[in-house]
Image 1 (tube, protein in one colour):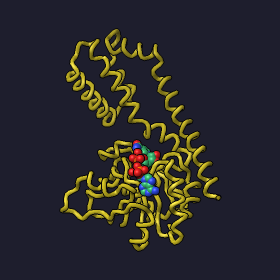
Image 2 (cartoon, rainbow, N blue to C red):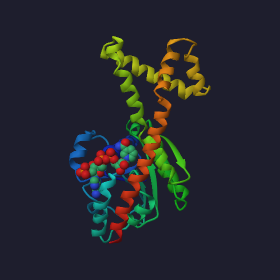
Image 3 (cartoon, rainbow, N blue to C red):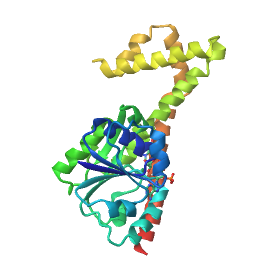
Image 4 (cartoon, rainbow, N blue to C red):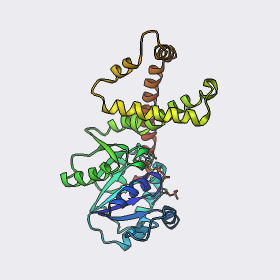
Length: 286
Ligand SMILES: NC(=O)c1ccc[n+]([C@@H]2O[C@H](COP(=O)([O-])OP(=O)(O)OC[C@H]3O[C@@H](n4cnc5c(N)ncnc54)[C@H](OP(=O)(O)O)[C@@H]3O)[C@@H](O)[C@H]2O)c1
């Protein structure tokens, strides 16, 4: 299977690294700074390097267009310049491609105007894909063949877990929950870490305590047969330390704050998407 990655930034490189380890794909990376990026990846010379290109034109001129999965991993604001690049390369057709866009907020309808193909899938990964523990939401429109669906799923299953949704709109919710989610957890851990002085613990001591508690609680959450409220109740004895701590979080409306945070993230995803989609769609009509 040939998999090409357009945009070798944080997300593009994370996806590339997992595919590269498997040594079963014919890989290509396309990025304006590709030479510098490849050097910085420091891969050993023992395995076959991927094909490296600095732009799409260079890529299509040098490769026959066999069936290819093209992972689109540029920033949303880089899509307009990319569209100009595609327009200039008159012979460039994406008919033999299946495009998988990880670009947040950019709709299938906009992407179809840029690439002039309906073979486009949207994926919403999160940063833990870098360590193979990612969560990726995927939306496959009905026209995607079962074979192409399986190939794309295989890529994201190498990066962690996947969830296929039946509506493109649900990708906004996924963005708000698992896309931004790692930062919510980091923020909570940061808040716990910031208590070191008041608790009289050194930075090293509190780091160990918070990290291992996060690992332990997450493992229990993932493995336990009981629902999470039972896990919480099991730690909370009447009149004890956990009870007063949780009552305090309640007093500061912790759960309400979390709900509002996630809803605001979803709304931001919808708004950012709609502004960019209109701007790109206007430009693709010119
Ligand atoms: N990071 C995340 O957690 C995350 C999660 C889900 C989805 N995403 C999505 O993933 C996409 C990439 O994010 P990122 O954090 O990886 O961004 P990034 O680090 O900025 O990577 C984008 C890369 O694409 C290159 N590029 C720009 N225009 C190009 C073109 N025409 N052809 C080829 N390469 C081009 C950029 O080069 P220059 O730097 O030289 O412009 C850069 O190396 C975004 O759309 C984002 O919404 C990211």
